[in-house]
View 1 (cartoon, helix red, strand yellow):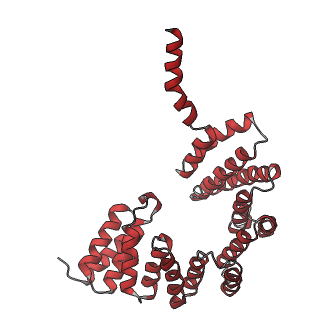
View 2: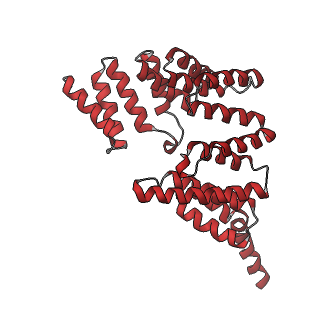
View 3: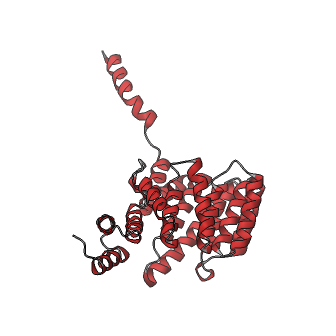
Length: 298
């Protein structure tokens, strides 16, 4: 009987033992959920036990960097963000010291150094150093990152030139056309932007980012209105988890297209949906206020 009881305990406990999450996995989920403080608490305890784990250092660096992006509110928030950014860099550098092939860690350092002002710890030369190390391990990824940095700096012609080189070298990666589209959108070259986003949508009708950006481009250009409406409707009605979608902005953009088209009741309905999702957004409030002022709507 005793052995039978032990068997039952093991029988029911084994699935829990096999499928229980590790502290590292829990911290990764917390980072995804933007609960950075809890993730940091767990990872700092793990680091105490195993200081030379590149994974612990990597994810602690990620947690601090991501927390820094959400802390820069007001003077005290800015100083806190600088301190968190500094800690994040320290742990990411430790991670790539332990594991030089930690390309994701190097990538985060590239963006962090490049996008952050010098006064807050940014350093474009250090970003280039990390980009060069990525190029040794993944030339394709490095080229894509370089294009994004050029776009961020407003070097649109150079970015387009590098995009064309990328297409020639990696023709199977049609996702590059989304970057093409964003560059052309920022240049206000809307016909080229539409063509780029449509290239991706044709290849993948569920390409949500390109569907949204097509609609956004239609708002900016006040052209391709019907196709813009269609794309935003596809985006809004996607089966993807709503947490991954900018539904409030999508309804707002859709309302704007309806307003341009003269479909005022539909515009009002979309603005109201946007406001229900984010009642504090001033753009949503102003849009419906302006609509109601300029048009008689039941």
